[in-house]
Length: 493
Image (cartoon, rainbow, N blue to C red):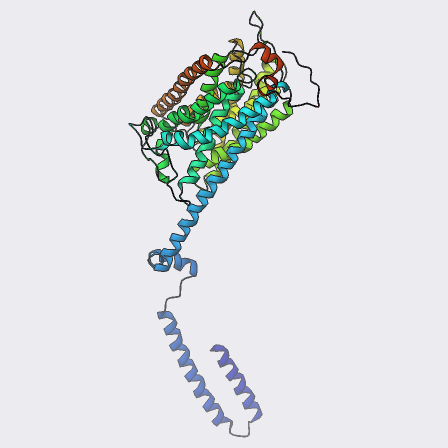
């Protein structure tokens, strides 16, 4: 409006100059009248503008009226769609991370192959391959129901043994798949500890019983209610009801497997030639350390699925869990290497590799509830535990071919206690007591049951290979084959 007025004033000036002789006074009077009317209109518009509130910005308007947005039918449908997408993401996350955990079977096989002698390679591959095949079938028919079925007093599941009546798109299937690879992991831990002197048939019998009974028992105590969100069971096991926390299985998976490994090597005895008559340990070198290192890398890779996948949902919490699963094994590898370097005067590759696995086991229970700084401390101590436990077993003349007991049992205990020791919400002495009760209850029961199983298997079908079979190699004795037919190896029994 002001611009228009200025234009009129300019026009007056021009008209005044151009028509001074043609009645300038009359023209100027008319123009003054028009300008006064325009000024009056401008004042009216200003008053109107003051009485009208400015429209809020789009973001502010959305924030100011959330209730109105949520109350519309269209937005309710949008919210439902978002929830559906999140649920589908959760299912994809469980299957994808479960597949990562399945890849750990290859890692375990490579570690055991590398730390054992070439003449037992086929036997090792067969054990690591078949124990998962057996675990999957037994867990389908028996183990899953015992672990996640309706609880019988918090001690064991009592239904859901046959789950084929669920719809094809039921959410339970993703949950079952994620759980079966955990059962396979717990089972295959034992294979390495008992390598190079265990009969094949006896080992397969053990694998079926562990996946069907032993692992589900401790799993129900700690994780019994987890199936409730997926349509099975829902009641807490007795440890879970006390407040026991084992986020991804330092005790339930690794402690159980490590305890069974200890029971197995006590029953089967040491490898032929591992200790002299006076008890002096003799080195039995692995035939392919680079292969063992590859196995450790594969295990570490799979562990990101093992730990981060245990959220069972795809959300922001997986980031810090992955960070902790990186920091703890790295710190443990360093501390294990340095501690053994101090003991024997040189860095040891086997201890270094096992140290990283010990750190991964140690952070498994607490990875969701501690900071990366705490994960660093957990890893440092886990590496030292791995070294000390390895030396202790050797001095007690207990022959663990790959170090499964120090890695999985000793650090399973440590990781479970770390839940209380390093919790981001602060230390709680009562919580520490519950954690101690839980980890020792699960591992002790697993040890006792598996010791009994191995004793029975040894009496009924035989568990230990003869000295001649061990000298010839289990590839020849058990499978009549040679893993490296085009190579000549020089080995001492």
